[in-house]
Length: 468
Ligand SMILES: NC(=O)C1=CN([C@@H]2O[C@H](COP(=O)(O)OP(=O)(O)OC[C@H]3O[C@@H](n4cnc5c(N)ncnc54)[C@H](O)[C@@H]3O)[C@@H](O)[C@H]2O)C=CC1
Ligand SMILES: O=C(O)C(=O)CO
Image (tube, rainbow, N blue to C red):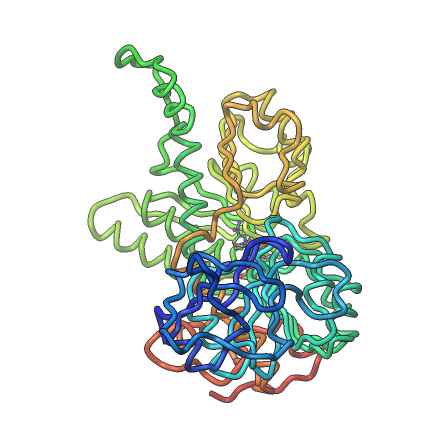
């Protein structure tokens, strides 16, 4: 079915125009014809509201097989009956037994296929609004909903878990590894499983942190703006002088999956020494740096070194480039503040690809103003989507809009893992034993294991663990 998948209903709003974009093959296979007649201009006309559906070319009807049905549950003008306010959706497999809602369109089609193959009706919110409110999501959940795939921008707390539970839902997955937007206790209270998507975004996110480190070190954005402004009038010894990374020290705060991947990139790619701080020892990372150091030594080069710091301050004092990769919780909120910034070297580089509130952004703006040689690379912001006043004016800051996981492979994989988390709970599958071993779920040439890849509250809910 790969490549054939198109929604059978698309609309901007329940009152707005709809386009039939279903593939006939899929629709025939699933028996999904809504009630339409042909209008004079060859557009399709809904028999209920007489609205024209265009363009017909998107939906190649075959002569006598014009669609006809009278199943009101498949009517496209409304999402489920109890919704307080209409919200536009795309529907796949309307006759599916389980109703799964995705609050956003997500990359790829595999995640949709996997759900519909397992008898799910998939509804994707197409509302033109980047961040959905709790009210919007309650409307999407409606009266009956078996599971929801949501986004890190949404506030998944008591209100939403209560609404999902009332609708019969027992499964939610964030399309993200970080789940600081989710009140897991509220989910536990309502018996809702909470999924996340670790592993598939580790390298992609680490690569963006490495990119921001380089962009800041070599002043790439400033130099780009200078060129475009037509200011370049010839090579100069002082023009955009930045920092050499080789032989310097990279500091990692939070050496989990992403922090460790970033550390390896910086150590191996730029021959930097490593200092890291984490609540846990990262033996694999230490072994990697040791082995690489020995390799360099055997080749007559200066070996790289590693050190596990006893405190975060030790990292801040010693490192030339510091990258933040902890989770966001009470212990990491404003981990970087006025005092910790003052501990750092005047020419240090700070990178944040974790969560905005790990850094006190007001203090950061002030520090950037006072220390023009101090530079930052930021993917995340304290009040996303906004930046604190003054940050946008700072030449010593490189800022990008929370794109660290934005590679095609990763985003499609995140969608797949999120869908499988929800599907697994709906089908009563056990939880995968090792949430870091995601490859079996991402293999497009084999069916995924019958398990939920990563459920963060599996223990609290007493869910069984897969023996696979
Ligand atoms: N900017 C983006 O697009 C992305 C951001 N993220 C963020 O990165 C975070 C980390 O992701 P992973 O590496 O997969 O998670 P992980 O759980 O493997 O790593 C987090 C590490 O932080 C450490 N940690 C926790 N509290 C700490 C503290 N107080 N001080 C120092 N270390 C502490 C943990 O021990 C753990 O090793 C996510 O929770 C998410 O918020 C993740 C993916 C993409
Ligand atoms: O997965 C996450 O936590 C993100 O921030 C999205 O990439």
